[in-house]
Length: 239
Picture 1 (spheres, rainbow, N blue to C red):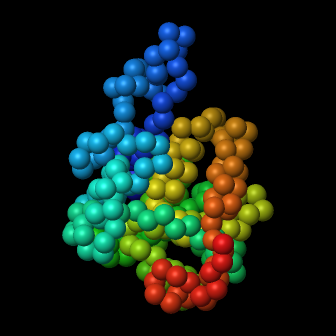
Picture 2: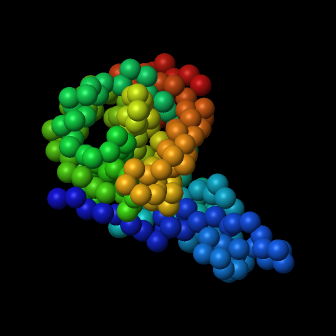
């Protein structure tokens, strides 16, 4: 059964101050005074700028904004206990990823984008896809993920809860990445806030294309079937 996932943390992450009014007062996304909507660290309440790090609240999958010192505290393995885990910033474009059309079609999702990650609370991998209403979780058989992981050993290095396999099969694309989980929710937010009508409209598809182009520019290229040396650094990684 599909489960729709929406979070206040995601909405905070996607909100950005808009242009100033004629009087010079900053406006937030709803037209209010942006000084009342400054993003703050969810742990210590320090104001944070765009591009700040995030933590995942393991109890409910919510993203929490974090200032640099707080994020650094949770970078150490086990530092967050069973509550928080820091979202890393590595981005890998996976060369030679094994996922053919038949295997993709067997997932039975209605769109051509999806992301997968290990949910430590559920003790399994989960599959989500973006929709105009938010992220939707779709059933993923353990055997299906096991086959995908066996065919692509690089997936064995995914950090639970905070890193994801992101798949783009829109148009002629057959692209696969390991990315921070907040990148996936940024894509979800882009679609949720920009989608118009039944097909989305040309603007949202241009923005989706730009999202993946920017991701490609910033990602290191690694061999999906080469495995990893230490769970972080893959065999044959290159910028």
